[in-house]
Length: 205
Image (cartoon, rainbow, N blue to C red):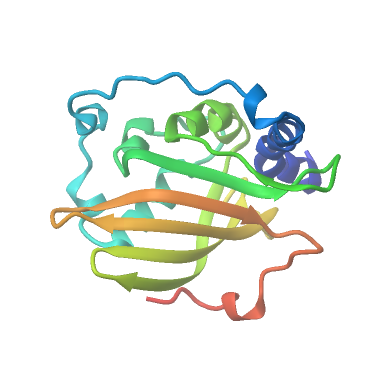
């Protein structure tokens, strides 16, 4: 499979759906859009979150390393999706962003960690996928942190070149006991949107 097809499968599959949905929504008057049905929240939203490995959530370095590690592996290697789920705060969101290949419109798709699993499990475990952090810039205030994490991806670690690069914008929270992922928004690098030179450095700690 060519690098172009791989990039489309990983970074654009979400966005093709997003662009179409966004275009449809933009044509409808507000009065025509059906309000979302109210759903009763579980008594304890944390009860549905699998217990995290203490070593995965004890520091900012640890939780970011766990994020990259848990989705990475060779073709045929099953991912530990409960470990993946354990990193996210209840209600956390994963947001792929980019340009719709058909319309040229910039858009985003709001997904849950479970949405991500359903959309990507077959590809990650079928093709092989290793995502590695290249550089990190952190801004923090109190118990929250915003992390710009530059990544590169290969099907196999032995591949000479990555087939994909981009930036993960990660919002983290420390509740006094552990770190949580609140949101990840990401964009792939493209010819018309290259990663800025200041982010192509060694990992910043």
